[in-house]
Length: 279
Image 1 (cartoon, one colour):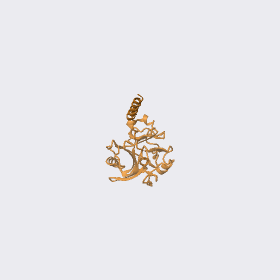
Image 2 (cartoon, rainbow, N blue to C red):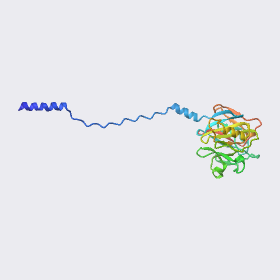
Image 3 (cartoon, one colour):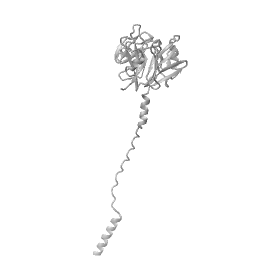
Image 4 (tube, one colour):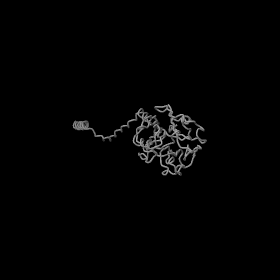
């Protein structure tokens, strides 16, 4: 019996060694998600630099030569500088006005009366001067900047005086040269003079420029039928021109510096100055 017991015990141990107990399967762990590819710092820097780089533009549209500065209002914006005591009471020209606030470029802005008062409503950093021009073509539209930094060009009938008085920077001028991408009809076609103007793509791209002598109708047709800054213009606003028309571009602007102001030019009441949107 003792031998049989040892034989049975040996068989049990041998069987146990050949068929070990099955362990419960461990649940499979999910594969870690691949990390999102990092943005290349170099590419980000290039994109930001391109956004913040106003450029001097010098071109010819038909027979009209144009010089100006193209910029993006997400990185650079216009400011209105006004002289409360009248033309040349603070700055003699656009160069002095622009440099006074470390601007990158400056151009003469709105019309003014023989007495030196703004011909239309004007707002400079929330300070208003002039009165609403409800009848003249020289006040038929407005350039504005709202409290959020958004800029645009709009007809005076669309904006209205009540809304205009809530804007920190505002310039009433005219006439519109281009509207909805088309040249405005029935513009003056015989008077030849230097022109200052703003061209806008309806989004964030702008051109602030001065043209060689031409009529309003000629300039409107030229701007509507071409893309002087490389993009189609939706709206263009005529600023004061003739002997008021001048343009200063600093050496900080790609392609600058430049200063166009004939010796026979008149001093003006106010300016539009291009500055970085952020300090």
